[in-house]
Length: 297
Ligand code: CO
Image (cartoon, rainbow, N blue to C red; front, side, top):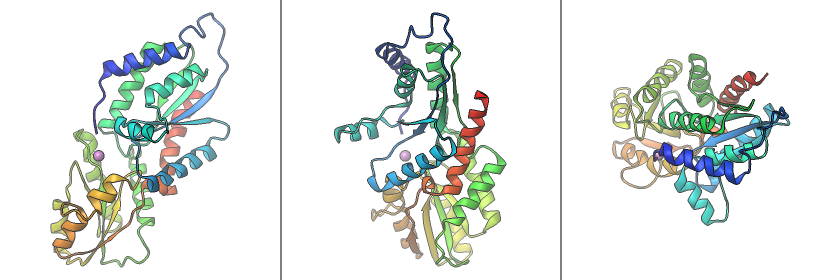
């Protein structure tokens, strides 16, 4: 997942402001009419079956904020390019914000749908701040809402929500391993260990490991063996059951978690359901949007 260069974000935003003809609006002392929007920001996915997570998110957000405009932004350039090739145009957060200002929106929550305050969340905050600096305030408010796991309460609620979606066929002696993404941002990455603590407290056979951070699956396998686990349910702890869930978690590749665990002698069952499809989990993000939104009163 690539980093964006600040310079290009600022340059891009200036271009958008200019093309939107917005730059002079509000400069003549008239007070702008309050117009509110929520910009849902996700990494994005190219997996069509995974899009139902986004449909669910949009429905829950619209229900919680009736009458407020809801827009989308995808942070991944690769994913935006793939959709563009199929004729679907998607904006990055800066372009989407430029368009919203061009349409005279004055109060905007940039809704993070990140799992935790890792690298991508911090990139978003940085880009939005850069955008705010160059676009000026003019009585407008643009706020970024918190990611999913940003308090003890959210940690416990998310853990309970995740457990609700474990298939009912699972027996207590079967283990569940959630696949988190992992972050190169170490304080953010430590949140997975914290989630592991809460989940383990609620159910000692439930674990979280990550693809690109800590802990890894190899840290969990000895725990499964120590408890003589026979069957493991694999589930994504990711917004969508997209590429990571379908390939790194449950693909037939010998490197996938399913293959690794099968090789270690476990029975494996895959559950392809993203957190964006879990209403109790999405509700936490919705409440984070509400907390940001409350500053508009
Ligand atoms: Co990734």
